Structures are given as structure tokens and as C-alpha cells.
Length: 116
Image 1 (tube, helix red, strand yellow):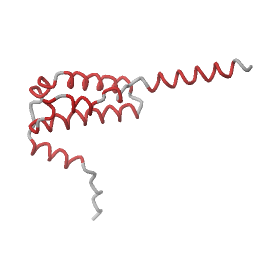
Image 2 (cartoon, rainbow, N blue to C red; image 1 turned 60 degrees about the vertical axis):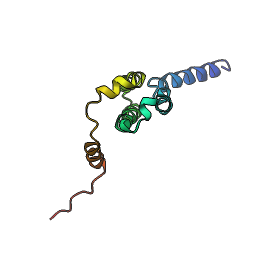
Image 3 (spheres, rainbow, N blue to C red; image 1 turned 90 degrees about the vertical axis):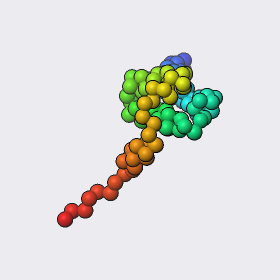
């Protein structure tokens, strides 16, 4: 009986580690990638950096809601985008700051309309 308890604990611990490693959002190290890529440091590319952070945050939400395959796919996309920042910046067709501000305002929670 004594040997079964440590074995059960080891299996439980291993399965917990496997589940938490299913979507490695922390492994992205996005902030380190941003600091390490001079192209992403340029003021003209602030929107691209915001987009990368938004994608990372979306992966965190997907992971929290147990959408592991979707989270893993999003993490893979962010890895691709950060691996080639120049290509990412060129592909990011719409970097209109005004549009970005409008979208950001739309993200703000709205109070429910008062009944008339």
C-alpha cells in the first residue's frame, strides 16, 4: 500500500504537468522577443506589437477555457509572426492608428441601456 501512494502521486503530478504544458503561452516569451527585435521597437510598428500582445492574450483566454488545440494554434501563429518581424510588419496591412483607437474604444465595456 505504501508504494502505491507515491506511485499514484507521481502519476497525478505527471498528468498535471502534461495538461499545463498543452498550450505553452508562457514559452512564447513575447515580451523578450519584442525587446530583442529592433524592428518591433520602432514607433511606426506600435500597432504590430499591440496586435502580437492581443494574440498572446487571446491564447491565454483560450487556454483558460480549455480550448487547447486552438490555443496551441494561436501560439504557433504568434511564434511565426515574431520569428520574422519584417515580414510580419509588411503583411500587417492595416496599421491605421485612428482605426486602432476606434477598435480599442469598442472593446470598452458599455453600460446597459436604461429601459424607457
